[in-house]
Image (tube, rainbow, N blue to C red; front, side, top):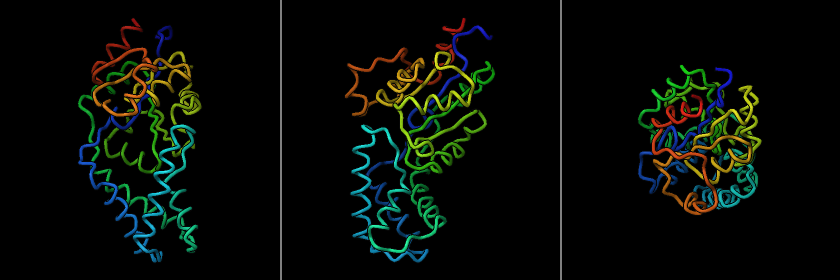
Length: 250
C-alpha cells in the first residue's frame, strides 16, 4: 500500500458532497431578516431598511472581488464593519454569533447529501485513504454545521473552510495546509470538486491530481474556464471516484 500513487483524497463541500435543494429566489431576504431579527432582539438599535441596504452593498462588493484576491473576509467581519460605520456601539461576540447563526440556519435547511456519498466515503476509508474537506465559505460555523447536519464528520480527518483560514481556493496555501495536517505530499493527493476556477486550478497550483465532478456544474464560474482549465480526470457522479483512484493505484 505504501507504494501506491495516492494516499489522500480532498473534497469540496457544496455541490460536490452536498447540494442546495431550495428555490434561491428570496432566500437571501429571509436570511437577512433572520439576522436583523436576532440583532434587534438582542437590543441592537438598527433601522432595518438602511442597515440591510448598507450590509448588502458591502456583501456584493466583497463577493465581486473575493475571487480575484482569494482572501476571505468573513460575514462576521462585514457585519461588524457595517455596525461600526453606523456609529452604533459594537455588540458582544455572542450577539454577533447568534445573529449569524440565525442567518445561516435559513439556508442550512436547504442542503441535502448527494446520492452515494456515504458508501463512497466508506469505501475510501476502508482502502486506507486520508480524507479532507476544503470549502470556500464566508462563515466557519456554517460550514461545520453543514458537515454535521449531513453526518459527514466521522469520515474526515481534516475539515477546513476559507473563513477559518482567511484564504480561498485556488490559493495553493489552503490545500497545502490540509495536506500538512494529513502528512501527505501534494503528489500523493487527489482533489475532487465541481468548480474549475477554485477546485481544479487550485489543486493544480498546489501540485495535486484534480478530478472535476460534473453533476452540478452549469454555472458561470465554470463556463468562463471551459477552454482554459483542464482537469486531470472527469467524473459525472461521486460513485465513479473509487474506481478511478483504484485504476491509478493498481
